[in-house]
Structures are given as structure tokens and as C-alpha cells.
Image (tube, rainbow, N blue to C red; front, side):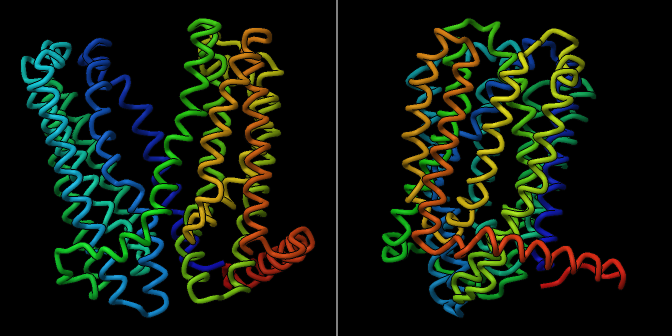
Length: 457
């Protein structure tokens, strides 16, 4: 296994633990100092930075793939042109959307921030400006994050990125603990992200000398080539929102808010297991881009098999553990307030297993910008699943929505695997190849353990 993939996987786990830790600590700290109403106001205001993500237009992921492929083939002039286009687009569109949001909030709907005036001590507008600035910096950082894959610095850059998140959360929690309000915490987030972004940009530029002195212009030819895969990438967050958030809305609308916690508790348990299982898959994406760009067919096949085997080895035991221990864990976790049925648990575990059967493959397809073949189907199948789930919900309760989600996951398995076979991502005789490769890995593990060394490829 490539040391790059190992390093990227470890960086992913580092970020996952930071995210979980911040989520666990933030709620009690903020509610203790601001109360539930103040914390609720903060959560609403903190959605503002994520809205600036729309200014990305799917270009950071697709542009990063194209930049990495170009650098792997030695086409540095093209890689520079892609980076220059990404950087300028992020700056212009980010500033335009941030300005438009402030105009809407302060001019068109001047009373839209009244809900936050009490919690912010009358400084709601200042807090919003800081949140927009924070989101703008995060958006601008997407360019060096994308370039990090092209300069072979993905793992270290992700580690820096996650450390920035840890630093800004620590500053915010300390600020709140000292008795300061929402605006001061917004300043903490903004300043920490600003300082961190300087460090992140400096590191990426130091690793890629060809990124320095890139002109401030947009290459229209490169932009036209990126347009189609970028639009397909832009669909994916919407498709995820349809299936994840839409299911909650439908359940609450039909069966009432009291039916939602059982569903979300089971889903959170299964999705957390998936996020840990997919860490190697995410780290494999830059490497797969390089292998595809250099037409290393053997390396591509081995990386696909590695991802499929690793995901299965992690997700199947997790599914068994959730089936065996999920209900008592949820009871303890929710102080015996939420009691999902075993059938709901079993259906969501089935959906989890099906999800694990297509997402790793889809991410590798996305690494070569061929994701248009499944992204629109993902959105359509998600919308159809919500419709079917709404009908079943009326007759079967939450079990009906779970059944609809299982059907959607099964449809995605069929779609992605057929696409993978058609474009040559899936190796021929994948079952036999997986068995042979699994044996090779096991043999290397035993050999490595005897020699005191790790696996190398």
C-alpha cells in the first residue's frame, strides 16, 4: 500500500476525531454560557458560511482532479492555467455572493436579523459580516486544497486543514468560557481561520514551485472543459441533502416530530460507521487520479480492489456490531428516551451495507471526472425514494421510509457498478481478483510482521 494513501487515511481519521470531539464539547460549553436560545441563534448564524460553498460551483473537486492529472503527465503549463482559473473564480464569485447576501439582509430585509439582536447585544450585523468573512476565507482556501493533490501534498495539507479547524474551535470555546458573547466568538473563528489560511497557502506554495507567480486570469478553454463535470459535482451535495435531510422532513410532516428521533438516531449510528470506513477511500482518490493519468492499469486495478476489500472488512463487522448492540447503545445514548424497533435498525443497516457497496467505487470514478454518469441518477433516485417513502410512511410508519431508502441504495449499487464496468474502472473478474489480492495482502502482512516493516506497493 502506498505510503501516500496511508498518510492520507491517518489525516482523515485525525479530522474525523476532531469533528466528533468538537461536536461533543461545543454543545455543553455554549449552552452553559449562552443558554439554549443563545446557542440556537449561534447555530442559525453559523449556517451562513456554508452558503458561500455555492460559489464553488463544483469546480474545486473537478479542477483539482484535472490539475493533478496534468501535473502527473508533466503538463505543468496546463496545471498552472487550471489553478489560476480556480483561484480567480473563487475570489470573484465568493465576493459577489457575500456582497449580495449582505445587501439582501441589510437593505432588502432590514429586520431579518432582529432575531439575533438580543443574543449578540445589538451587534447582529457585525456578527454576520464576520461569518461571511470566515466563509469567504474557507472558500478561497479551496484552491490550494485542490492544488495540494497536484503537488503530492494531500496528507500534510489535510492535516493542516484539520488543525486549523481544531484551533478555531478551541479559540471559540475558550472565548465563550471567558464569558464573551456571540460576536466575540465570531471574531475568534474569523481570526483563527485567517491566520491558518496563511499557513496553509504558504505550505502548498512551498511544495509546488510551479504554483508561484501564477497570473490572475481565467483560461476559458480549461473552464469549458471543466464545466460539465463541475455541474455534475454540484449536483451531489443536493442529492445528499434530498436523501438525508429530505427523509427527516417527510417523516416529521407525516408522522409528527416525535417519530423523527428514532430514525435519526439509527441513521447517525450507521453513517458514523461509514465515515470511518471511507477514510482510506477518500485518501485513495488523488492517487487514483495519478494512476489513471499515467495509464497505470495494474495500479488502478489494485487500488480499486484495495478499496473494495478494505471497505468490506470494516463495514461488515460494524454492521454486525450495530445489529447486536445498536438498540441498547441508543437507549443509553438517549437516556432511554428513544426506542427504535429492531426492524428499523435492520433496514438501516441494510442501507448502510448497500451504501458501502457503491460509494467507494463512485469516489474513484469521481477522481477521474466521470461522475456525471451517476450524479444525476443519484439526485433523481433520491427524489423518487422520498415519494415512495412518503406513501409507505402513511401505512407503515418510519419503517416505510427505511424501505424506500434501501431500494434507493440498491438502485445506486446497480447504477455505479454498471458505470464502472462500462468505463473500465472495475477490473475484469473482480471477484476472483479480489480473492487473489486479499491473499497477497494477507501474505504481505504476515511477512511485514515478521520483518518489522509495513506493506509497500
